[in-house]
Length: 468
Image 1: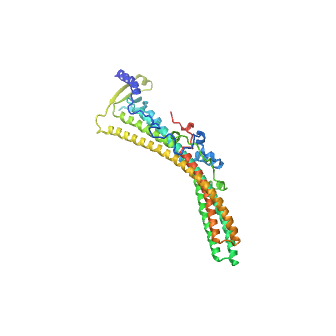
Image 2: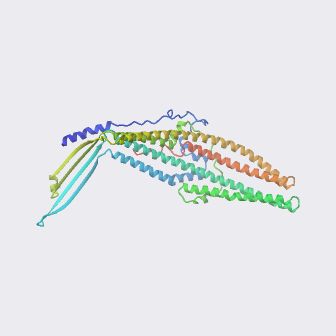
C-alpha cells in the first residue's frame, strides 16, 4: 500500500503545476476602454512625475507643506487604509499556505493500574500530514485573487492619500480666503464708521435729513453682521485641518491665526494624455485590480467542478518506556480522490455567479475610467473659468475703487447724496470680495485638477508594492 501511494504523490506534483482552469486575466487596453488620445481642453505635454507626486509644493507655501506632511503621517483614515493593506497582504500568505501540506504532531503519557495495584506507564508519539494537491489550479487561482486584492489595497491606500492631500489643500485655501474676506470686512467696517460719523455731522449741520444717518447706521450694522460668519468659516477650516492631521479641533487655530495670502499656483499645468491619467489615478488602478481578482475567482469556482486529490500520512509509536519508542514505529500514506456527483447545480451556479461578478467588476472599471476623464476635463474648464473671472474682477475692483474715492469726496463736499456713496461702497465691497474669491477659485481649481490627475502619491515608492 505504501508504494502506490508514494508513486501517486510524486505523480501529483507535476500535474498540479501544469493544469489550471479558468480564464487567464489580461488587463483591458486603453483602446478597449474607449480612452481618447487627448483631452478636449488640451494643456500641453505631461509634467514630471515628481511634480505630480508632490503637487502642493507648487503653491510655495511652507505652512501648506507642513500640513500635508502631518496629514500623510498622522491622518486616521490613512491609518485605517494602511491596516487594511496589511490585512490584505496577510490574506496572500494564507492563500499560499494552501499549496503546502499541513503537518501536526502529538504526544501522550498514561498510567495503567491492575487489580493487584501494579502500574505501568504508556508513552506515545505521533505525527500526521495532509496535502490537497492543486490538480486544476483552484489554489493557484485563489493565490492570484488574493494577490490582486492586496495590490488593490495598495491603490486604495493611495486613493485615500490623494483625497486627504486634496482636502488639506482645499481647507487651507478656504482658511486663507476667510482671512482675506475678514480683512476686507473690517476695512469696510472702518469706512462705514467714518461714513456714519460724516452723515451725523451733516445732519447736525442741517445739510441733510436724518435719512442719511439712518442709511449709514444700517450699512455699518450689515457690515458688522458679516464678520462673525466669516470668523466661523475660518474656524471651521482650521478645525477640519486639525482633524485631517490627526489632532483635536482647535489644535492648529493659533498657528493659522496670522493672516497669509491665498496660495497662488501656476496659471496652467501639463496634464499629458488620458492614458497617463489612468496609470496615475489610484482609484482606477484599484478598480482594475478588483477586475483581476474577480477573474481569478472564476477559476477557483471552476476547480470545484473537478476531482480533488488529497494525500494523507501518519507515523507513530507507543511503548512502555522512552527507549522502547524507537522499536515500535508504524505509519502509512493514503491518497484519495473525491468528486461531487450531484449538488443540485450549486457548483455550476457558483461559477456563473463569479462570471457575473467579473462582468460587474469590468463595468465598474470602465466607469472609473470615464469618471477619471470627466474629472480632468472639469478641472481644466474650472481652471480656465477661474482665471477669466480673476481678470474681470481685477478690472471691476479698479473701477469700483475709483468710484468709491470719488463718491466719498463728493459726499463730503455736498455734491452728491448718501445713496450714491452707499452704492459705491457696496460695489467696492463686492469687487474686493470677488477678487479674493476668484483667487481662491483658481487655487481650488488647481487642487481639483491635480487631484483629478491622481497627484499626491508616488506610484514608484517602495511601499506601493505588494508582498511577493
